[in-house]
Length: 357
Ligand code: ADP
Image (cartoon, rainbow, N blue to C red):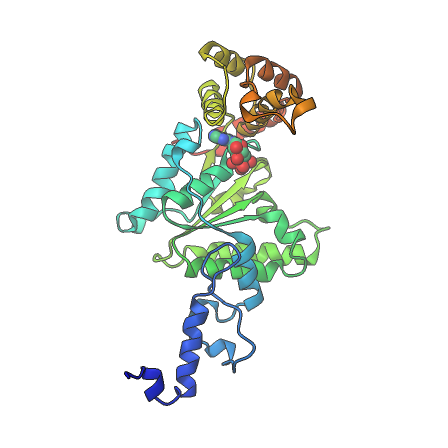
């Protein structure tokens, strides 16, 4: 009978076994289904020294493996498909994002030298207007890895380790290029260090600035940093200089609100006609995209509320369509979350420092 190679050959020498083991490690995936850069070691086998382990990319050599794992599990986000059509309205912002970020990521050879794009794009505007959606869409459309982190979690969630985390984040981002790093509440990382600030926070900010400034040094790097803030007025001149492209993400206009409602109702049984939808849009001036989302979800509960005595037994086809009255009721429950005072701040900042698209 034919013998397999394994039967004929002596056991592989130790370094071959090591290679096999390293090959296996390469296939380990993180919690979110993303192949891990720094797989956990199998404790049953002899391990090489971590720094000389060729599986670990050179750029990760001086990074704490625990931090790499945390970045991969907590910050790296499996790329969801988000299309520009998923983002209602904001046509100017979308155009500007294409020129500033998408085209340079897709055609880096056209954006060299003095055409090289700045590494950072600042999105400012009231909460719930689609800044995170834009970040996800950039990553999705440019085929980039998406890292999503909020600045406050750096100072609170990883107490005492935020600084290492920042270093690991940028190192992993380099290895996984093209990359979009989305940092929410970026104002809190860029604002001037205050006296009462904790030492740990101070160190995180310093490390962040070091990494941010180092990010654009290699023209090969395809890392885009998208910072989002609801408080642009807190950014001083130095912070603004680091983000020369500053894009206003405003509240949705009437057409934008309509698109959001229509998209959300698409998958539901409803009886709203065009005139009803017009009325909903008329009555939601000042609502953010997130407010519109909340409104529609509240309205969608109307039919369920009307069968509340019988939810357990009701057949699916007994649930009536969502109607205009459900929206009228929802409008008594959901109020716009953005104040006029806040809006003025964004409009003023946009006039002074926003980019035109
Ligand atoms: P931000 O980052 O500006 O605070 P998000 O992008 O997280 O806001 O938006 C929160 C939610 O609000 C989104 O998941 C989406 O449901 C809805 N939303 C906000 N703006 C839009 C928009 N322009 N188009 C569609 N949905 C939107």
